[in-house]
Amino acid sequence: MNKIVFFIACAMLYVVNVHAENDEKYLISDSFISGAKYVDGNLTITDSSLAYRSSNESLTWNGESINFWGDITLSQSAQIDVKVSGAAKVYFAAKSTTSNAERSILIGGTPIADEKFVSTQIRMIGYEYDGAAATLSFEPDNGLYLYMIYVDYPSYTSVGSETAGKEIVRTEYYSICGSKLTAAPTTGVYLTRTFFADGSVKTLKIMKR
Image (tube, rainbow, N blue to C red; front, side, top):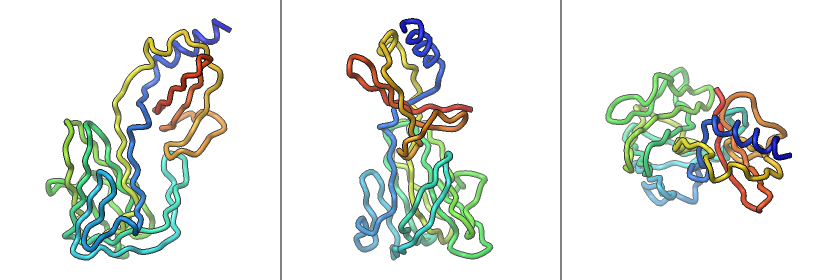
């Protein structure tokens, strides 16, 4: 048993991971709209007219299907402010409001990525920020339906001495959005919860390339 524990602990030292509890997911809801402002925790959106639409759409991201029950329509004059505590990747789930027209989200007048939002499907497009705590201000280059914003904090660590040598009772695997998995994925990003014999629990985000 000790040999098995030692092997698992050593193997995990080479896995890139991060504490998953730091991540922030903002699913669009009409309960956060007040006039021309949308406020949910560290997310603030301002627009001359924030229109909420009820919908039933989904997106497959990192191997999981995410269901959306609504979105807000953003105009070109909208501003999206996201407070981050440090280096992070900010993802936007959105699609274009106009058929056959591609859209981008900008920061400082520059698109956050080469990939564009389209009208035929929801896409998840991210912006990587590697600075200190700040409020990041984004704006669409034209009309967008916004479904979700996800802030991923890549504070990479190793398991280190705090869990080395502990007896592992069991390990559970979850998708990035919290759905329990039957086994660890072979690629992509997922969460693990490791339960130890002393009663402690370690939650990590694992990235396999």
